[in-house]
Image 1 (tube, rainbow, N blue to C red):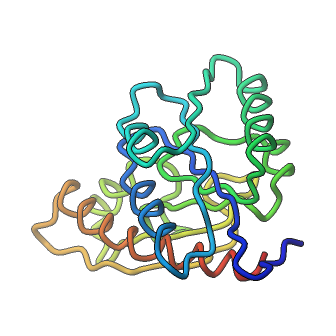
Image 2 (image 1 turned 90 degrees about the vertical axis):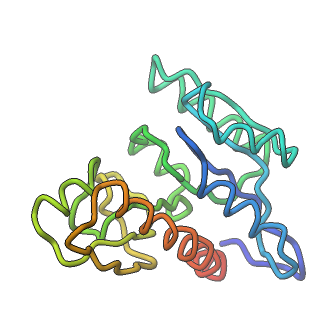
Image 3 (image 1 turned 180 degrees about the vertical axis):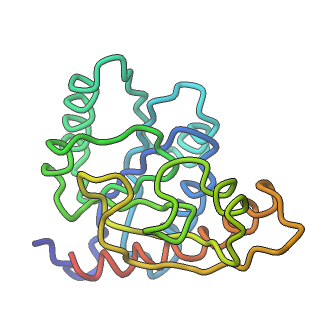
Length: 194
């Protein structure tokens, strides 16, 4: 068990595949006065991920991992995490599924944000599916990662109303705003329990 001793910050790594808006948001939170964490490593499977620009901007170490072989990719990631003394992993739009073996190496120390009210709409195309099924609400969920897709213990959720004229794009935008609010809150909660 990790204990927060005095003001020592917990080292976290953020995994991304795309634009990195949750990454940017968490980095900004890490600079706040009472922040308990520091982003020490950004991992991406996509060399063209726009979010990688934040690594340069905020001088954070980044590693692009070739996923042509899952086992090798995960082996490389684990080496990087160890090298950078990472205590916690935050997935933020990381489009690869982590193996059970990898998850066991970081048991209870990997969290993810998902754009639906889990357990509803696991996986992809959450907004389209929610609109198609005429749901009244959708939202976002921060949860622990386990070996089943989007099935880990829920840390925090935010309910968002779906309006009649909402499209996939407008709903996505609305939910993303709430993601930026609940991810740092959930992270704070998790760090408190480490």
